[in-house]
Each structure stands twice: as structure tokens, then as C-alpha cells.
Image (cartoon, rainbow, N blue to C red; front, side, top):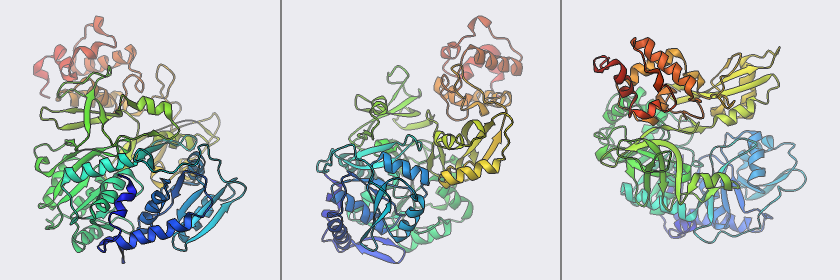
Length: 586
């Protein structure tokens, strides 16, 4: 099944498909509008296989989306907050010759693409006209023009990690998307009577599949939230439009939890789905109190997986609180250790995923793709474990991604920008806890000798070159950055201190932790022990000294090597061996 079939099957349906502010459109009108723009774009010169969208959440975004797939091209959505440098990088990398936007977007694109040495055609949906920005020739196309006609052809390329010099796009095929759509429908029992409220960016995988495509596939109704998120406005729309479900990131739900204490009874609201960041169990319990008749569905996924992988259904949300549930239909999940062997129950390892929704690969990144997908299994880089009932629990992330308000921030991208400042010698970006957003990026900077700039100078530079949510919340200056044995900057070094170790040891002595979880405790919530902490014998000695100092005990020095932790299933047991059971109930 192709994405085009979603709309084609409803081409005569006079039911309201979407509502955006005061604008409504039926399925029949939506199909007609898409065909109108497709016919106009059919005659516009464009040798590239990829067409970009530069639009906010709106009906126009959906029109542009389906216009591209009916043109048998590949969708490349741009975030509205994209910087000029990143826009130029992605236009070149994704070989974009045509961008679909509106009159407002056109004015912004002129600012972003001013004085660029290439030509881009801009199609204005509200005018039905083509404009040109730039000079010279269009970006060169490396692949021959190809029509996307099979379900294994790429439908969309979604943004994931990458920098301006090395962007990265996830290629999802028509089959990938449709498999995830159908699995999501089956997992939640959705139907054409449903109505969803979209508040997340439509250009992100989370919203793209589980809300936009799912509800259009069903012939259901979509309400698109307009403007900045306010909890009171969000609740009013849910009630007024009789929405049956919505999807949020934890920071949105936290605003509701802190701003509304009395119970809210919505007879129509069956589900609130959430994911894309950490949600404290106490806050989740508070939300369940506020919405007593609504089921909360915790989800887990990755853009590379389509994106939905698992969900925790409402019937299990209390007894399995903290879990991300079980795999959705058609998706297989395993936990493997460093040797690639499947782990036992309660034993942590890397989460790997298999199914028809797994991406085709990273665009122009065959080597990275081959390291990520092995024998049909997607290696997520996330750490987790299954309990004995088959419920998945996340322990941490191997990758460095910072999740702020549900948005993925890759520290390497920020570091690359700050490194361009002439006075900067070295920089590392790391997450700092934030009560509302979950995490925010912080930059630690080393200046070149005899150079002097202020934190505000770094922040202002970042504001020019980065999207707003990627700008560091603060900048700290230091004389040097700690390195690993191989000379890499120790990304998590800010968490590795004697003060933190004392707290960590006190904390983990109360918990049963696997070796992978020990790794996480030694940093913050995630860390690659070998690569990022450089966990060699020297650091092992430092850890042991801290334990000896705190508990006034003495280790057998013959055991002090890199393998010492592997002899115990938990740090608690390691400590128990030397300080005895009596001191563990701290």
C-alpha cells in the first residue's frame, strides 16, 4: 500500500478531514486541492527526486505533503526554526531544487537563502505560483530522476542527528510508514469515529505516523492546534472538539499537571499518548488523577523504526508504571549484550528492533546504515530490559542525544557551531536537568590563550546559527576539558566528581543494578563506560578509593582491574562483599 492510497480511498468522502483554527476541509476537498497543485507542479522544471516542505502545522502542510507523494517524489520536511546555515546544508545534501511553502514562508526563505550560490524554485501554495530564490544553477543531482511507484520506494526523509557539515536523514519507505500506521491502529483499537488533536510538529516522525497518517488512513478527523502551546487552550480545544485522543511530549503534560489541579472529566477523550522524553512517575500519577476517565499510553520509538516500537496500554499503566510497554503488532524487540547475545529477564542490554517499519537506511550514509541495521535488526543505541511478563523498561541512552521538551538535540551540532568562534579552543555540550523541559543544553568552553569573550557572545553567536531550542541555556568557561585515554573529550566529565560519586554510591547501594545500569549511574543517566568515561584501571582505583573512604573498608588490591565490576551483578553486591549486609540499608 502506498501513502497516496490513504487519500485516494477517501477521495469522495464528504466528511471533515481536518480543522485548523476556523478553516475546515473535507476529504473530498483535500484530494481535489492536492490534485490541483500536483497538476501545476507537473510542468515545473525539477530533475530532483526530493521536494522540501517549509510550512508550519496547518492544512497547507498536509496538502503539500500529499502533493509531493502524488508527484511520485520524496518528501523532505524542513523545521520552521531551521537556521540559514543548516538550510543551505540540507538543500545541498538532499539535492533540493523545489521547496513548497506559502507567501509568509517565501519571505522568510528569502532571508535565509540570501546570497547563496545556487538557485531554488519556491512554490507558493496560497498563490499557486512559482518564485525563484538565488542565482546561478540549481543544486546538482547525483541520482537519476526516478518515480516512486513501489511500496519499497522512499516516501519521506526525516531529520535525525547530524551537523551542518554532515546532515543525516532517515529514509522511510511507503511500506515502512504503512506498516507502522496499521500497527498503531491495531494496538489502540482506533477507528473512523476517532478525532485527534495535533500539537506536536507534523514534520517529526512521532506526529507524522501516529497522528497524521493514522487518522487520515481511517477516515477519521484531525484538529490542528494553532500557535504557542498553553495548557488551558489545549484543554479547551480537547473539550470543544470532542477529541478522542492526542499525543504530547512530557513537558506539555507537566504544564497541565502544574497548572490544573482539579479533575477534568472528558467522556470522549480515550487516550493521551506521550513519549519523546522522561516523565517522572509522580507527575504521571498526578495526571492520571486530573484525567480520571482518560487512559495514558506511554510509548517508545525511534525515527529509524517508523517510529513506534512499543506502547504501555491504560490497563497496565498503574501496575507497570515506568515501563514503556510491549511491542506493537508486527514489531519484534530483543535485548542483547555487547557480544550480540540475547539477555535474560531483568538483565539490561541494547534494544534492537525488527519489522516492516524499520527504515531503509540513512540517506547517502551506507556505512552508518550497515552499522545500525544488522541482519534486519535495528540497533537503537538505547539500553533497556524486559521483565518476566515481557514489558520493556528503558534504562538510558547510549547516544549523546539531549531531549528538551520532546525535541532531540545533538550536542555535536552545537559544538560544531561554537567551535567556529575564533576565540574558542575546545567545547563540550552536555545536558542539564530542567524542571519543565526535562533537559537543556549547556556548553563548557575552553578559550584560546590570551583570548577573552563573554558567555553572552557565545550565546548570541549560537542564536544566529542554530534553532532556538538548540541554543545553550548557559555557557561555562574552564581552563581545560578532561580527556579519555584516547584523547577524546570526556563528554560526561561534568558528572564525574568526588561529590557526585559519593551520592551515586549512596544511591546505588539501595538498588539492584546490572552492569549497564552501573555505567549509567557513574555518569548521569547514560554513558558509554569505555568510550566516554575512559573506564581504565586508574578510574577504577579512583572509584574504589571513594568507596573505601566513605565506608572505611579496604579492597583486595589484587582485584583492581577493569574486570572487577563484571564479577558482580550489581554495584550493591560489590559493596556488600566488602562492607557487609548491615551497612546496605542506609
